[in-house]
Length: 178
Image 1 (cartoon, rainbow, N blue to C red):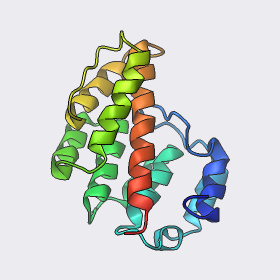
Image 2: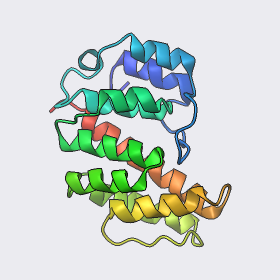
Image 3: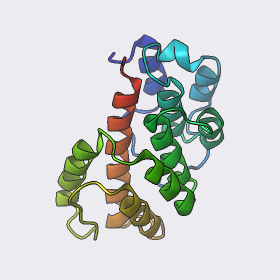
């Protein structure tokens, strides 16, 4: 696999990476993944990453293990770490804190591709009431806030799918060798 056999093995514990995570972290989705992640160091799984804790926090979030992700990325060293920190606060949900961290991220290299992915997703959900030009992470925080208050709505489905695209793009970016 793209990130090595151990990361592939861990992702296989819940749909291999394309899972739509809930907009709000719930209980950890896999105790097996929790044990596997807890037994490994970030630098072992992501030896070439600028901040190995960033994609490791992404793995923890993939399995909805909020506390572990937060403990790992509480003091981020890169924009990718700040980005993961912002996502985890959006999923907490703590929109004000998420917006603070997204402002620290500033412009990010994945934003253009994320905006393109979101536009494609929104074509499938024209009633989602979220329009974008350039990617605005704070506007997405607000969209997620509205969507989570409407369970099983078009907004919630669109937000979850955009969040999945965001996870995949950021995970790929932060996990690669720099």
